[in-house]
Image (cartoon, rainbow, N blue to C red; front, side, top):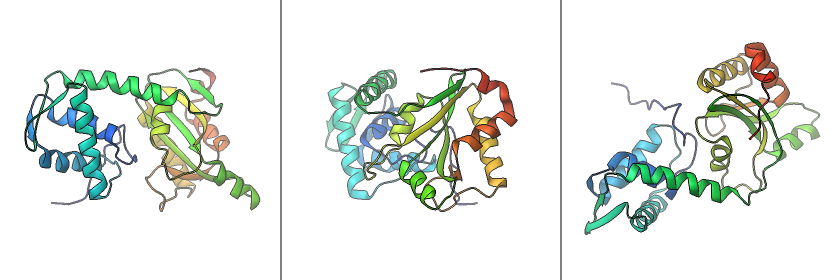
Length: 237
């Protein structure tokens, strides 16, 4: 049997470092209505996140993240400490955490200065392209017109998805070039990645699998070739 981890492309925290809020969501997904030992929670949550394509954390920080997540869940009356190292989770905790997560994410985003960007298409899912300005400026200094760009997809709010991937160790926010709304983001992302790989643009050494040496205009041109109609359906957030 192969030990290779098969990542879940639909996992909303794919390529995202694990945080207490992500730990909360995973705990509720895995242990809703159950009583579990904290040691089991620590092992199961990290295993679930990594196997689905998320980024890990060192052992000390992750244990602290789990403790903080459990404390937050306790304040929300979702988790209750029954005995030393034993936690019980309410049967309706999944519904509660989903509502709270949406509310918290929206509030966290209110004061973040997001750049203006183009939007296209209509649908409940989306494909997005972002980059860091430093990458573009470095390429321009070398008289190049391509630079590292992230092309990803999501079934949640694309702004929340992009901002959740911004590391606190990076001094600038991602620059969003465009968001394309669609009801089939998986196939659109797949075709874009395949087309850019054929052009030898994939950055294999970058974190995650969705970084390519390209630019927004080139990617939009590929989308026009795949399905020009999607770009004619202008949208706004």
